[in-house]
Image: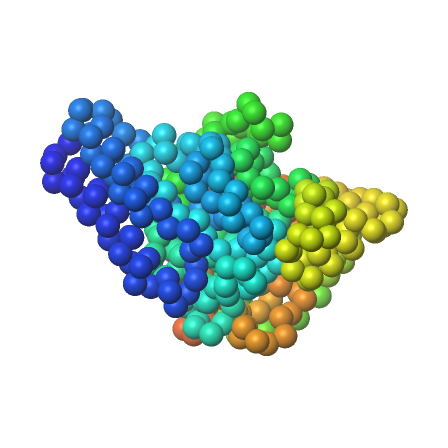
Length: 433
């Protein structure tokens, strides 16, 4: 490895850190920047390279990490003010894998309090602005990670997704957001809101880089009871793609610009020779599923944050406390009913998606909205399905002007690699139109 390449790692680290210093004061995407740590990691990489060591495929690539994922020596607040001094001693499994692949950690990103929200308007750490639409929400709960990537402050970032918390901000900010099959990315060292629904996810601006990051992180974890191993890559498919559009999409009111972008994307696929057919997911009512999944998240969140909830003097916000108290006090039959509905619809989705290569939906029914506007209740109507089914899902920006629109592809469980290849092919089709 040449000295020029080694020096360029330090130069790149300085570039990203300088970009954060210049851009982030207006966005508040980061809550902690590891200036010294990132430079030290870059210097250590140079030393290893100078010694002739072959580094991993992500050598020198910087990563932003949502602030509910442990990074040794950095605060992990989970968006909660009283956790400012909570500093883990060890890395989450995903962060450890990232370092093993030669990656650098830039810092921790802003999020909704306790990951229970979709705005990244945090009372303790500030309101994250949308770099693709200043004055508008970045979405959440992983809004800081999406904004960091969209603004060019980080090439890739980690988030977590309960009902769409990676894909929603990816849609609003105009980047790619990928939620893998449940269990493919380790949750060890991730602060869990809902053990039934939570999944780590990845943000990037281009699909090839996202694939590289995913391959570094999709490693079975013997210490995570929910971890699953991806099968070996299947042979490449030669037949034309078959894309399914759920008939239940008609139940969701789309902002006109979203409807136009979706129709244009669908037509582009047909012109490219890709079969697009309607499919029916039995029992799926998008609003009912979103409400049921939110009940599950509130009940399980009340368990995850039981210590804070029991402490009347804790400084959690009244809104966050109210949601946790609702979950704590909900009658058990209502939780069981909501959980059962999520399971039934998730099972139906897993069966239906086996009949096509992927489902196609808008990611969100609307584009990003102004910070002070009434936020729509239906943000997760089209994303919760993949969480209920444990299915891989990816949001890809539609080719259009103005505030971004995300288009979502949902694939069969454990077909993550295939879904990423489909996303690459489909995005190329859209961009060619």
